[in-house]
Length: 147
Image (cartoon, rainbow, N blue to C red; front, top):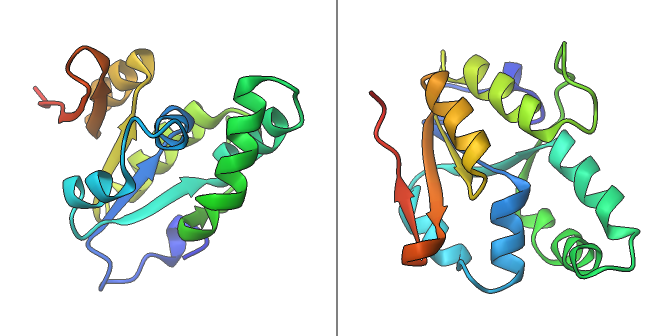
């Protein structure tokens, strides 16, 4: 699957990981096995915008830069990349792309977004998108209830 237009009937669910969740995996705070169990049956995916953000961060000589480099070399190859241009989202606006892709795909299949970003979580819920977020206080992933 390269774009949301490529979604076939046999795909029942897409789990979109944002940059914050990828960093938690790199820091060994969240296990990939836990994510897979939480979104059982979903295809783990990232928009090209997240990949662009990681590439940009990986060039920096900071802890985040080193983590982004590790993610690019150890995790990204195992994820589906959604390479869709999204009107209204710049190529480096990962949150915008996650919301817009989720809204479009959500008309066809189940979409779950995994994030540790509280602002993104709020925006996703406002748009009726299912969210699993990392709750730092409890050190675990929790589904958010849509109202």
